[in-house]
Length: 294
Figure (cartoon, rainbow, N blue to C red):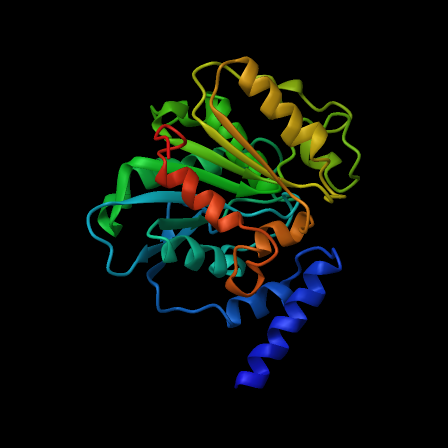
């Protein structure tokens, strides 16, 4: 078993460090070697009527009192992804005392922009209403995403249209966390992404950077300097600059040893040596979105 575990770790590192897209095989290996002793999982909870509108809740074991909550949205270019592929994220957050909510959302070609934003907001609304049943504190809910999921998180946190459908506002969130997110990507270069956003008629209001205002919740923006999929300067850097100009509290962090995919992979225990992503997220949440100084 020990030899098998080491072999699995080597395989994961090989897959992810080569910069390949985080495919099913590498994620399955990560999940296979992820401990299950840190959380209680309640799976397949419906937040809507569509088969894709489901989520899982990871509640930390032995938590005392209502715990902070992180709703996580995965990436996949809005055309792929399953919440079950990211069990290691749920475990990582729960291991630090946070209730993790991992949500699926509808994907292209079945839907286009903005349906996945409607789903993301719907999952947040469900969490705010229901998470107390699972040990979470509805007053301390954070929204987090990686890649396309970071885009979804940014739009829900910055554009009030999506939560307004549930009589909520971005201020219902204590903060949001974006990992390698595309926040300003017109003109669209990726050919697979173009039909998702009706390119070349992509609406400007589809871009998170166009929704920055002073009332936005605090943000933690993390990126990889070596990201070849989503330009860290033109996205994380540009959004950070605009948020700060609007007076919004934002923490900006870049890592050198991670790629676009290993940035999220580094939340799993065998890859945490690549970058302290989990530690950074933990500090942000523990500091109430940066409101509490260390």
